[in-house]
Length: 133
Image (tube, rainbow, N blue to C red):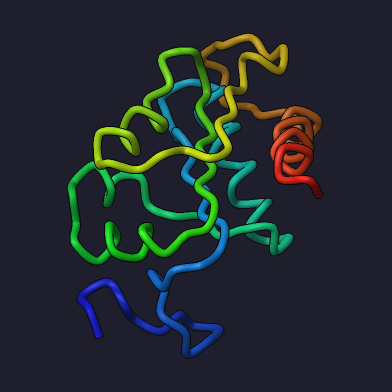
C-alpha cells in the first residue's frame, strides 16, 4: 500500500485510489475558490466523482500522480480566470477534460467567506451539466 493509501473511517478502500472522475477544486483565498471547494465536496457526496488533492499534484507526490493517471475524466473547478487548478494539473502533465471557472457562472470574486448555498448549487449543477448528468 502506498503512503497515501490509508483506509477511511467509513470504508476499507484506499483514499487515493483511482476513480473514473477526479475533481480538483482551486480552494483559493477568495469566495470563489472556496465555492469551488464546497462544490467539489458536494459532488463527491452525491457520488458524481471524487474530490482529489490538488496540492498532491502540485507537489508531484508519486501516489497522487499515479492515481490521477487512472482517471477517465479530470475535472478542474477554478474560482477565477487565473485558473490555478487547471494550470497545476497541466504543469504535472495532465489534460483537464472538464474545466470550470466559478466567475464565468456570474459569481463575483470577493473575500466574503459566507458562501450562499445557492452559489454552491450553481457550481455543482454546472459541473454536473458538463459531465452530462
